[in-house]
Length: 410
Image (cartoon, rainbow, N blue to C red; front, side, top):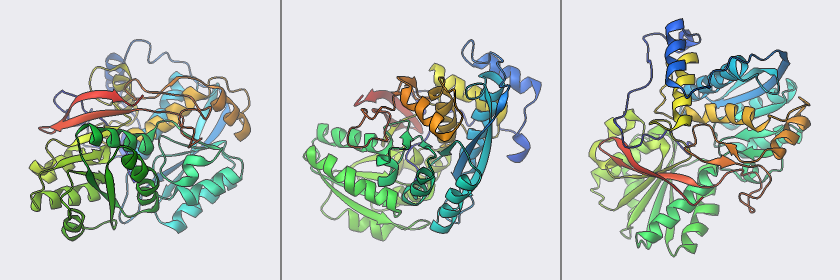
């Protein structure tokens, strides 16, 4: 499940920075012109040229890639860009060069188990997971071997509660809390959530969303839609029984497209709430008018004049210029660069040493986070010890752009 996508505040959306005619694999290195462009557009001091000189530290990277229903290679490419940026400019992790150990998770149980086992066999010091609906499969194997599990956000019970799991943002729980508050403020009494039918998304909505909305005086009905469904009109029609004042859409690109198209077909006129997975340019174009006015909740700001947004675009432009910065790729970037920032006190490159450094960090600036920060001492969300951040960014989709971005529930 894709909890978030890059935010485009009240400015004209650029397609993506320095998109070239090269293939993604061919974009692994940049020309001098690209590097200069990146340096100029980034905030001053962003490229200090402090190269990592210490022995390599192995960091696992698991990305949802290669599956029939879900495949997002840009997430991996953005993570690779963050690692190369850190190695060339920030001294890597504690002076040690980051060596990414990549595993492509096809988002099905056997593939997830294989990736988790590979991380243990290859003795990585930490594992960064871009996004997954199979956290309950990945986490026990990885953390059971004493390896820290890291992600921008998590949805599964294991991700949210493990004492060796670290989630940089408030993620899905924070988004659901913000949605519930928004629904209450709008005077809603009934809301239907259409979600991709994977355990993390469905269970997250039922275990976190339903109670959050109930506490706000709003009834939340959860309607799962199987991954890859081309026409979800039957499910959406059933979910609109009872005339809900609002709907929530949770899923990846295909789910967002089919659910929003179905809402348009059924002429639904209530309020739409969603996550960043639903706001990429291709989805906005495919869906048309039925996406207009949707309220979007995220933990990323990737366009505009914010320093972190500028740095994100500069790093991607320099190291992986074919990546769409308006899309969901930022989760890979946030995961890796967040780890770099959270381990500034690192003296021991073992998994235990990485965890110690993470737990000691405070008020770490969330990369591309629009002003959000994280502290991994278990206090951000006492019910979910793995969550290190809180708060969300809320914005409204207008004419293909996200406008009126604001931090909420901090």
